[in-house]
Amino acid sequence: MAPKNTFTDELKALGAILDALQPLPAEQREFVLTTAIARLGVGNIRTKNIEQGPLGSANLRKAALDGEMTPKEFVKTKKPTSETQRMACLAFYLTHFRRQPHFKTRDVTNLNTDAACPKLSNPARTADNATKQNGFFAPAGKGNKQITPYGEDVVNALPDQDAVKALRQESAPVRKRAAGKRAKGKKA
Image 1 (tube, helix red, strand yellow):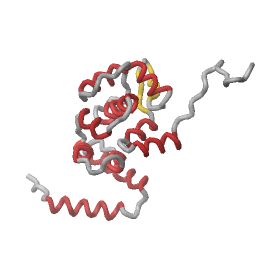
Image 2: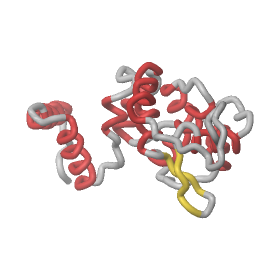
Image 3: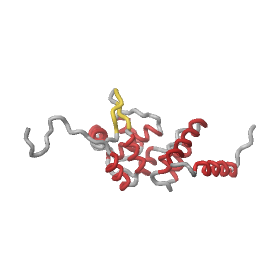
Image 4: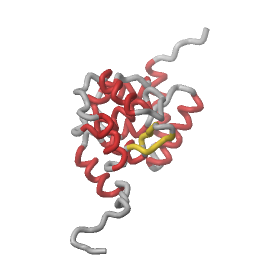
């Protein structure tokens, strides 16, 4: 039987890792960490969840370390201010915590109930708005949706609404005008 590592051994290992990663830019740090995590088989840890959002949150730290967090805790931590933001948080949770990257509106609605959140006023309309107006979701075939990279960035930025606003200004997807619609006051 191999001897158990002590807390001191864990701190030494952490110190070595931090020393090795310190000189690297953030993108390279993330690559090294995610590759090491995958090779060691210790779970799906998203470094952006650790770097962004409420860093002092014990729940978020717990989720980052052991890959578990209830949907209720996750939504509470993210503090979405609209139904589309809440739906994006729930989709993020499905994708990263339940490993369900493709989902239907019903899946998000059921998770909303599990999270003990207020009932969505019109889930189909909210999902449509999250897709077409906000760019949080994209079609995934067979009536399924998936969270977009932009949607993930918004969830990662929460609960900081100023950061969400900055994201919207710098990287929101460009929406095309519907065919046949004309600008006000212009004739064909």
